[in-house]
Length: 428
Figure 1: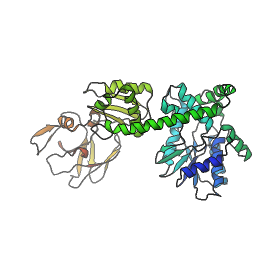
Figure 2: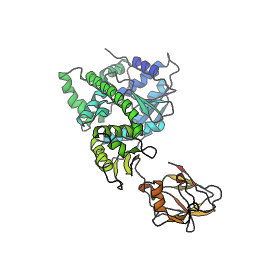
Figure 3: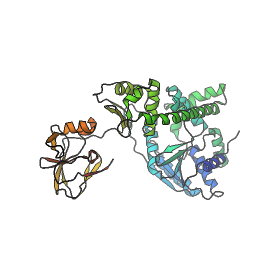
Figure 4: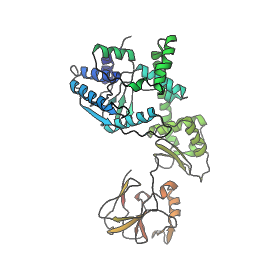
């Protein structure tokens, strides 16, 4: 059955209405077809609003000329365009494809407005290649479900309305409408995994199984349906796994499940919290090093964008901690907010603060006088009583007048026996 891109787009827009659609426009065949087909629908459906985003990865000498080409195309079609130039840094041993993809989606998330849908031009062949890539990497159901037609993204939604169209059908549309498209030579470079599959592997498979693209896309869709069923079950079960602190999981509750269920619950929990899912090796490390460690240990398992830590019976997932020097001493004029760069936080003094104080961080041995209890109490023991995780203790700003500790992080409702109030902390 042939594909009319405009028909698929219209169905998508009817099922997923939005205030505006942000089109990812590289200038290549696929995204040019998407842009042109969207523009062609506005005459009949004037309520549809589009704008485009071109991302220059800075990997080709002619990329600036490509950006100008995309601007000219959008001007001709009457679609506003914003061009974003990336400054990619490729860590040693990292995949250029993965780094570029992460940076590209980060740019989309920055430009996406609430209620808006990002549209990308992924098609049936892309879906088949994605499934094969995940298969050779040993992925589970999350990877084998490949790319969903629509999913939550940043402040809005990411949509792929052309997943049912083949590459050949999009090329035919481009030829019919005489679209002037960009040909990126890197798309022929078989050193990249996806290009290797596209040019070296898939053509051989298609000689034996001509309907390979459609068949693999169907397999991905079926895996996606299985993933939806699993998500529904896990979402019902996760609340019973909650730890004592907000956003945490209980170690004892997780250990009551078998290893398969533990892994599934951890994946769903991480997905709900917006973290990138770990590889199987990392997930097994969480089970061994975090769930089965000594109760007094403070393990940490890391991967890109996430740290898993444990304190007592609670498992925490968080972005990697910033570099912080607990020995720094900051002089604070309390008439102005104090930004603590190493924490990305700002202190704001309440009324009654002296004009000048110092902000320090725990070195050990600090104590404070508590009138409601009587006598001085070691900050170490108070942190233990309040259940403050060890990695947070040296990152809590302590406010001093001279050598008198007068306040710290307000969420612990702490205040020494003096007339000064605890500062407010704003920021992440």
